[in-house]
Image (cartoon, rainbow, N blue to C red; front, side, top):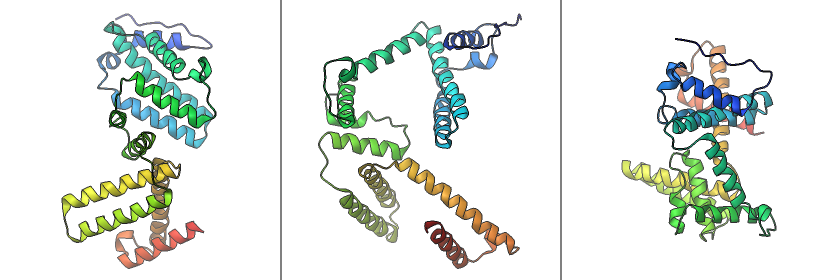
Length: 269
């Protein structure tokens, strides 16, 4: 099999990426790349998107540049699969997003006037709904992607419900709602009603999503930060145990609780 030769360049651009992907998917390309379809690499899109987010959080520009390239590769990969079937091309993808941006920014490319970014978002949401042919507010809620992380999906559903006119509570009311949900969950746990426990737990988490939205906080980030703090606290407790020649498994529950409470108090000061 004759090997493909691609010219060495000082600077490559999108046309090179498209050409390289064609070669990889071609007859003399890579066996693995040729075998892939949309379903086999669908999770790669999610993984690369999360790696972009991690690079953003780390404020590492070099890492961000690399991860954006990996994410762009996924767009090119999926586009090439459709191009091979003569369905659409990467240029069609670019055409579609350009038209969408122009359509959804009438205050920039048209004669619509807006006062602030809040009005921009309201118009965007309205135009998005119209372009998707959604007739009811329920359809707007149903169109939130089901594969989103549940906390993120919950916030978006609450936001769209609010945009539809269901907005009659303040953050303080949302906190009270959470307290009520905790009480309902506690009763279900005490009665050992397994089905009710899952339902009440879900309602509690959803109520937390709504509170996060009202407080303009990212519930996914808040939970991630809490998990990271727990891991740090766990490490400190384990190090304390090891210094005493023990493992966490050797420590009585009450002692673990005391240490965990101490670490929490130390980190909250």
